[in-house]
Image (cartoon, rainbow, N blue to C red):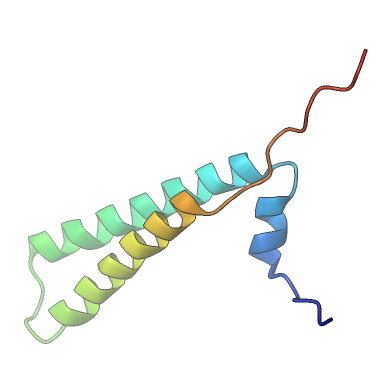
Length: 80
């Protein structure tokens, strides 16, 4: 059986700080998308618009994907 190597991001999301890591990344992606869309709304040369729109759409898609990506959760409480 072949093992699959995890990326650094996958390892961080699977670790104990996974939920916090995802939250930070989601906030950064939202901020990036917002900045891109604000710049687009402020006006761009027509030739540049498709690139900016693609970047904003990519940030939105990454945010959507990451929102549904499983992260580590706290395990059951130790028997006491």
